[in-house]
Image (cartoon, rainbow, N blue to C red):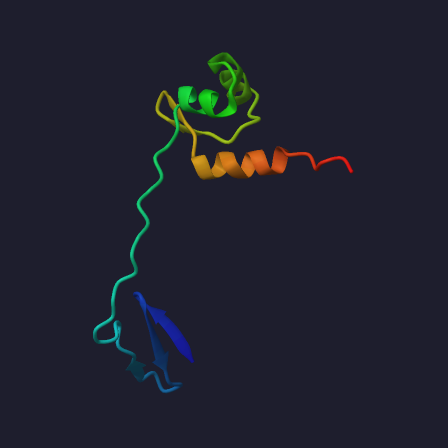
Length: 94
């Protein structure tokens, strides 16, 4: 039987005795973290879409575009915007 204790997986026998596994292997190299992608402002998104800021604000008001509201600020995750654009794309006519 295995039980999760903290971040390490511990194997627990039926009599309750646990046999722990090492939490880190010796000489393990931590995974490199990707730097976070900076969020886009309304002006950035309007430039990216080649539309007026007013149109982006309307898309936000109608909840037609993925956005993040942080206090009174509206920001856009570039990854979410790319996925949104991909799902909005129509296939070419053949």
